[in-house]
Length: 493
Image 1 (cartoon, rainbow, N blue to C red):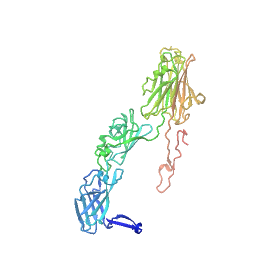
Image 2: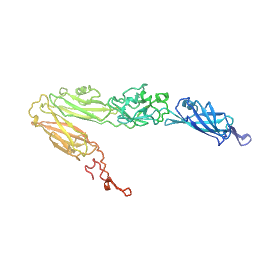
Image 3: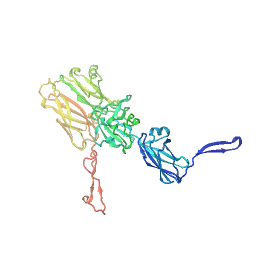
C-alpha cells in the first residue's frame, strides 16, 4: 500500500489530497479449498489454495477484516501453489463487529483476504459463508383469526417433522404483548400446525384460542432443539442465543371484517312458557355476546346477567307483561375488539294459552342447484289445552335479504315441511323467512329466521376427440365447453 499525494493549483492557492493505493499482482489467485461453509461459532478449520509465481512461505489471512493465525502452509506445486490452513475461524459475531455483514436467507457471505507477508502485492480475495440458525422471520394471522402463517428466514430441516398435522404446541407458542415467557395453548386446545414448506408453518386455531396481534411467536423448546438449516450446517435454533429468544410479533394480514350477527326466536310468549332467542355469528374464535332490551329496564337488567360468551337468551314469561312488545338486541365482539351492528328481535307476551312457540330445523348447507329443506316445530305451553294441537296450519314466506319484507316476498308454501326447488335461490345469498302457524281458533304464531346459500364448486368438463386415443403424429382437440358454474346455470350448456 503506497500513499498518493495530489497537488492542484500553485503558490498560496495550492491544495493537496492524500489517499492510498493498493497494488496487487493480477496473477495471484486464491480459492477456498475446504471449510468453506461454517456455522456461526468460532473454531472451525478452513484451508485456502493460494496461487503465485514465486515461492512464498509466510501468509496473513483476514476473515471479514479479522486477522486469524495461520496454522500451516504447504506447497502443493513448488513455487506456484500453496495450501494455507487456519485452525480456528472467527465467530460470525466477531466478524460482524469488525465489518459490515449482510445475512440473507440465513447465509452470511464473508470475504477472505490471503496476503504474502514478504510482498503485500501478492494478495488475493475469496469468500466463505456462515450459516445461521433458522429464526422466525414473520408471523401473520388472517383477519378472521382462524389461520396463522409463520415464515422462517431460510429453508430448514423442519425440526425432523413430516408434512403431517400436529398439535401447534409441538412447534409454536406465543408470548403475550408485554410478557416475557411463552404461554401454551394460545392457538387453542385443539389447534393444528403443519409445515407447508420447509420454511413455512401454517397454524389453524381452535376453540379457546387467545392469541392476538401484538403477541410474539416463538419456536417451542422441543422443536428448537432439532431445528437447523436444510443442509444441516447451522447450529440448532435452541443453540443460537441470537435466534432462540427472538421470535416475531404477530401481525394482522388484512383489515378485520365487521362481524355479522343474526338472531332467531319466537315473536310471542305464552302465559306459562318462555321464549328462547338464539344469536349466531360466523367465527372460528370465541365471540363476546351483549344482550340488551332497549325499551324495558327490568328485562334489560335480566339480560345483562347473561355471561359474555352466551349466544342464547331465555326470556321467562314472568319477566314481561302481556300485550307489550319488547325490543331485544344483541351485538357480538370478535377477538380483535371489532363490534357487529346490533341485531334486533321483538317479542310480545300473549294471554292465549293454546298459541304454540315455533322453531325451525334447518337441513343445510344450501346451494342454488340443490333443493333446500326446512322443518317446522311447534311447542305448546305446558298449561295449554290439547284442543286444536293437531290442526295447526303452517305457512312459509321468503324474501331476499337478511330482514323479512312482505312486499318483496317471492316464494311461499304451506305445510309443516318446506322444500325449495333447485334454481329458485341464488348462490352466495341471504334470505329471510317468515314461518306462521294458525290454530283452529284463528290465533296466529310467527317465527322469523334467515339462512344463506353457499357458492357451489365450479363443474369442470374436458373431453377429447377419438375417445381419448390419438396418434402421436396427429392433432388432438380438447373440449372444455361442458364446464359450467352451478350458481349461474343449473345444467351444462
